[in-house]
Image (cartoon, rainbow, N blue to C red; front, side, top):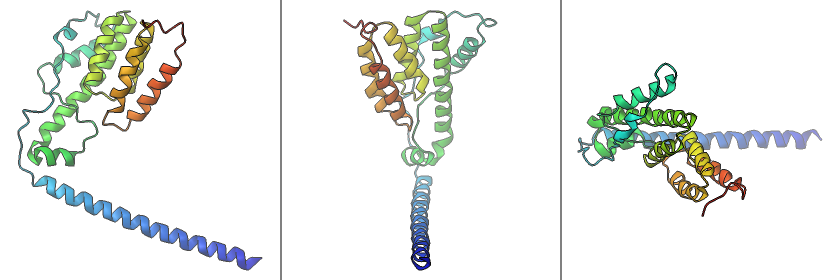
Length: 213
């Protein structure tokens, strides 16, 4: 019985060694491709940024009333929104720095990174503001804020979850159907999870909750 067991162990070791060699070779090829692409990106000349999809915050979003002492989260969100009012904001979620340089030139990367950082701040502030509006039972305003966030292609899962909950509360199941393809089109690793969450939410709606005409 010793010989067959030993043979199996040896074959297993050989197979593992071959798999590791293949993995190392694939990793090297991927690294080589990355550095070739990175070098090419660093040679791209500066391109115009005027056709980027800049995001403009609706003016009425700055007018929501709040008490800075009683509502610190809302105060922080509003402070961030006001700080971004005259800033350039672009959502580059899912796009690597290398791809940004290939499209717009290496010299533009600092500006593009700033635009994307501004977007991250905006998306989080919009979520905080919407949550505050829900607490204040200003449902219609909360929905407007969340829908704007979705239109900017945010991939914050809680934005879609909260908006879905508000649609259900308002008896607007059909609007969840509209959210699903938007989530599916996101250039984000979270896209699939958001879609599944919305589909589960839709499936959980009871006939009593669904008052859609």
